[in-house]
Length: 305
Image (cartoon, rainbow, N blue to C red; front, side, top):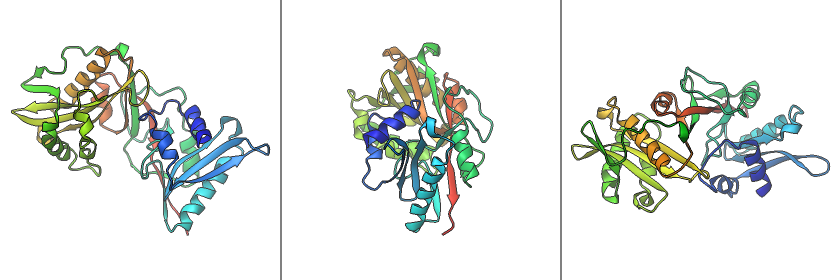
């Protein structure tokens, strides 16, 4: 497992997730592994399948364009077919190492883009040639990053009242209102962010992840999770931004992101990021200085048994 993890981290140093999470996913007991090695036993490529999801398929840079990726993909697809599935998914299954296949290709217009120098469309092109399509249609999936040295939106801080709305740290007593707000904000989405807010550790002042809330007339109308070095050293994160449906287009989301990002800078961190987000939010986060660092090909394919 350590060899798989090492190769993954070497080839995708720009992918950030909670410390230890990647290794935990690689070690899942329901994973199936396929390998390609040289005659002297050197690992040059491997793939991980969980149910009908290919969590990862990678080939060492020095051994690409030799058919190794095709061999691994064939093994993955045959395994998925043998389990009775008729569709294969790239990326997100029971969990994810990456939301999809990192790519420089985008599927609709976007703004605030500054791709990592290691990102290209080689992998997404490989899968497209094998019959995979981007399942999100004309919607991008991406990560965003920024150097906090460049962050200049310093007008306010957590605890301030802006346009009649109080932006403060949440306590456990706010949980019911937070769940109500996040469910309302996500009512037209497949995924409800409230499941992330139910973690009671988020309301402990000493925890490295906390919740920022926007309160209007004693009612919670916005929520944001702020994380400190959970996904890497000297790296802070903001995410799971929610604004009550009736309170949108008032700058609440923008204010929460700016306040959360300022907090990360104020405590001495130099970098900030957010991951696994989608078209439309590039403007929200981009207004605070975040830039798209990689897109994801959210690949799927129907299999013939």
